[in-house]
Length: 303
Image (cartoon, rainbow, N blue to C red; front, side, top):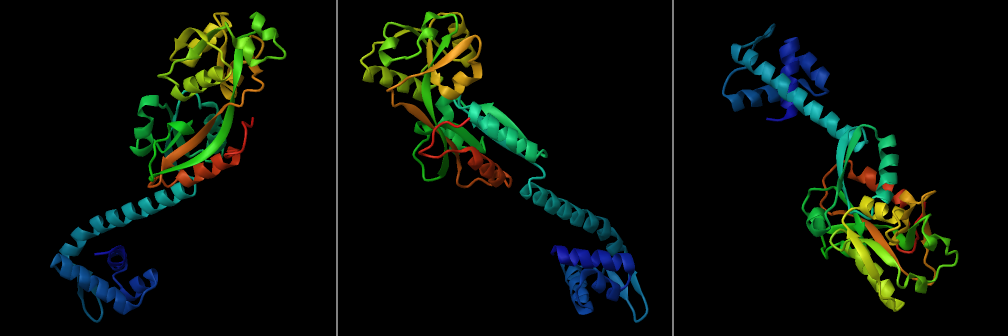
């Protein structure tokens, strides 16, 4: 049984005329007769009685008709839904972001949802511990995270979105904020408040590597699992922090300032990752949106 057989059966049932059914379905009358005969053989009943003058639907045909109409309507609805999804009409994306990479995808999502307002986007925090499984396990359509957190797998696609340099974040009330020409050595003996290694392992290691490069032994006064805790500690003059430039931009202003670190050739490469077998029909639309903002391997952070 196929959809063409059911469509022809419905047309004959509605018109009681094989010629009209053939016209409606753009097939020959012999094709309609064959389709009806095939259905009758499949169900083992006669659906119509035919004479030279009349076509009459049998009781079995009358019983089949509402089911045929329901099947055809369901298939038509499925086709329209899939087409709308492919054209960006409806659908859903689930996106995961690690704690340090939330600013970049927020811009992409804002652009995407303004253009495709029928597609809902669920944004969820990506646990650093489960990042490998998140990319390959199907819980997320796309994941934004540091490139070094991506597991080695031939089943993962990645797009480098940006390189985010590290900056110092200090309270505007902290004497440190008056450093106009900051040198890495100025970080010596300063109290640091940082995101914890468990919350942001790549950032934590990158900071320590940078400090070791300049032979600086850090005085880490506090480590926190949440960004707001770090920001609060900085604004309270508990210490300064080192964060990606994009994160500093979220809080820097009249109460806090970000200070570039000269001569520190350091930055974190961020990517969007997804499974090569992704089946979400709206995924391609989101990839194209992200490509507009992604700077690639050689790019810097672009605001």
